[in-house]
Image (cartoon, rainbow, N blue to C red; front, side):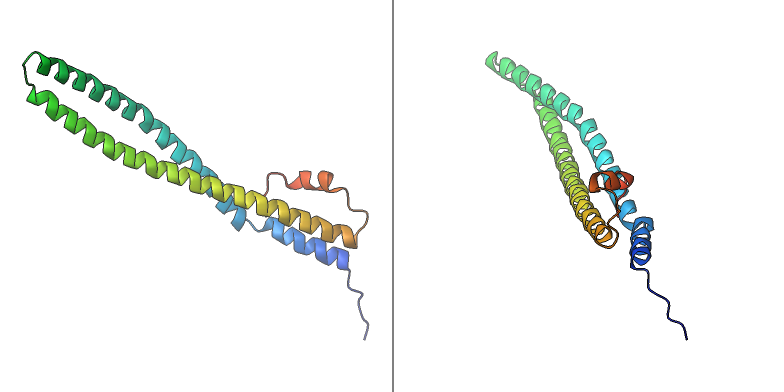
Length: 149
């Protein structure tokens, strides 16, 4: 019965490669980036609408005040102000939801990047410990710059 010598370097490199090829975390990370961009787009689409409504509200309120000073009441203008304010409240609520989504996705992206950096450095230290000819960390990590493991 012959005993094969266990090749620690090969085993460690194989295990690391399995980690690199596992795409679950990369898929999650890419999803966070996609969700972030989508939320930013939606947020930015709403900002001009809200600003336009605010401008219209301000103009209508000035008109109502000027008419009131002249003794004329305008129920239609008052109704329109209320409608615009209600519409703006709904838009502001939606924009706040997008802002929260942006912040959540940014936090997740940053956390994944920090954990990835730590994980890569830990793997490199382990590989360097068993194989002193492993290149420097800065050179070695370049291979995995766009990869979440």
